[in-house]
Image 1 (cartoon, rainbow, N blue to C red):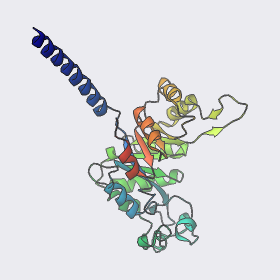
Image 2: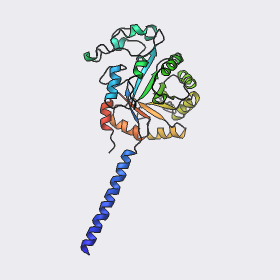
Image 3: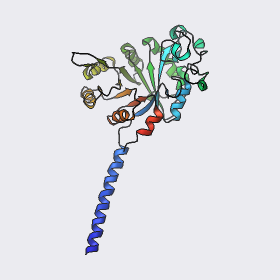
Image 4: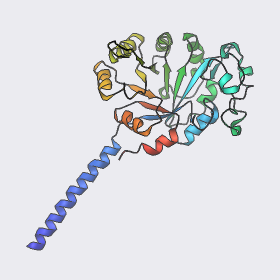
Length: 284
């Protein structure tokens, strides 16, 4: 009898332990999926917005890449953040007043590291070609609505499915034009937070203001500056209560911050350090 009791107790304990382990495993599997997105590619190690940076991002396991795009003087779409080339080439040329050929004659890689010397300013078409079958692309439009027509032509000539693309912009008019031109492409309006002393709300835009803007321009979601003191559980709850169901965050290099946003259901987490982030976001 004693042996039977011991065996039964052991079996019950084992079953409880097994069920507990299974629940923990399920928690890992069902954690909200988010796209780990290379900000301007893997820009912590390779020169931002170059093919080297984007290819490195795919190499280290990014789910998506994000790049900044502008128009050249001859109407081509190129990948560069600033309105001029001074910071990344050492030569001051205004992108919108310079031809594609002249821009691509500049060295966009040596400033980062000598081994990247010769990297050029890629076109959107060249960036699209780097995206693997599993990958997605965030196209940040750094200009006004004038970029939308050339963008439509470029995307029409690309084999990348539009379901793999998210258009992002701070400019409301550009977002509106994108909405009418690309009814089936995801659009996120970008915003950052400003502190207003002695005003309510203290930080703007508020969740209600964001929701109102998205409704006005027809965007699918919002790209939030990743300020943990502003983008809290409460703030995200307010967004959802106001009908905003999709958000991504930029720019997140701290693993704890990334885990917070992922657990809160972020569509994507944009980072300069995708390799390091990838190593730390395995849920316990």
